Image (cartoon, rainbow, N blue to C red):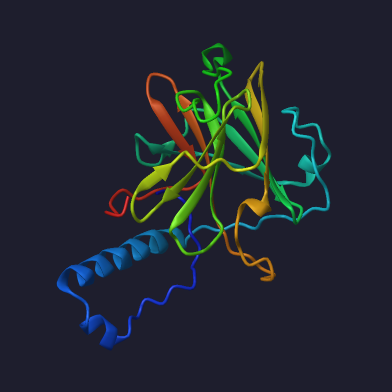
Length: 239
């Protein structure tokens, strides 16, 4: 649950009369869900960034040679969030991102001092969880409940899922409609993602959208490192 969440439209005040009519178990469950919402919402307010909108597109081929990437914003995955708490990442990862009103585009430049150790195979979809992976986690609804995860290995093999954050349940039976491609290079690997916004049911009439987003990389070597652009406080019992 390390995704960075923006404030939503939840009302945290329940009318008193309906609450009094609940059974003890119903009150307990309601309290647990309220705590879950607060746990997700409160730690994630410190960091935010702007998603640039460009009237451009890219060819998803793993080459990163389209002009649009030059105008995209860039962020680094500097933090180990698993199995350690916010230590410096052992490898460099740059992420470029933008949207054009129809599609979210993301590119990863994942450096590796030993490219021969990169784990990547031409699996079937959702079977590459043990490989090197890069991707993005999205909460476009602003209700702090569902997180959409889009990951790809260095060959572009897709791993996607929906996570019910409050129930701590992940379903990989959901298959989104998106494109990915990747290639291994002399210095690591690079991956491009194109995620159509029609995958999500959000209010497109709102001019300034507030989505939650986390960029991640899984780097499996002697240990499986999870790298992120955000930090996670493990002293917070919500994690």
